[in-house]
Length: 233
Image (cartoon, rainbow, N blue to C red; front, side, top):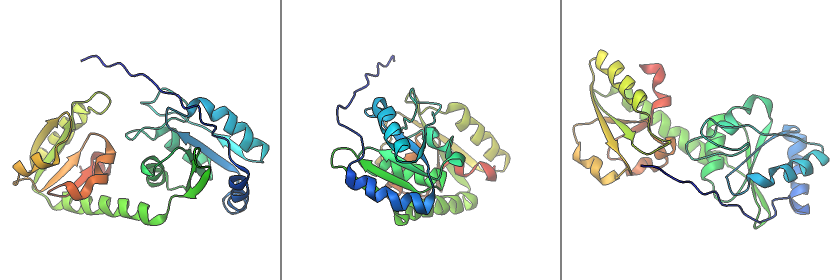
């Protein structure tokens, strides 16, 4: 099925307010001046304006690009490459947008401090360690279950941009060589209740959007992302 994506642009001013600028001063002193800028598609077109503002404040503002994204500084739920690609070149990240979904992912996958600038309310906040630790706790729990499991279900999405058929097949082959029982479960939109139909599965390995693990509590059995078990294959 062909899919047409229509990008939306926000007209909201994303420049930092005087209050936020003051909050950045101690951050600059504590962490450094190299800041990585990340945002979603509705704000990316205004990133150059914010970049100039930060450079006038003495910061070095950098942007990167993910493999699945179209624009510089743009991140998706399943692709934070715009951040991971420049993580070794920045001291911290500044996310422009609302919600905690994207900045938490950047904090987890880069191990860098992440601050969120909300353009509408003009507030600046930091992703706290409790949110990051909870995510990492789920990863460790999934890894532990995976290692001890004999029957594994490999989750594979059929959605464009999330389909990793080759990876799912590779994981199945590697695990079968180790004597594991492996089942590939293909889906379009994951229905957590349907997973109850596979009580014989000890652990799920996710090859779709890595943020599925955010719903760890909805799974009837432990789940872990494919990227977190590659070293055990």
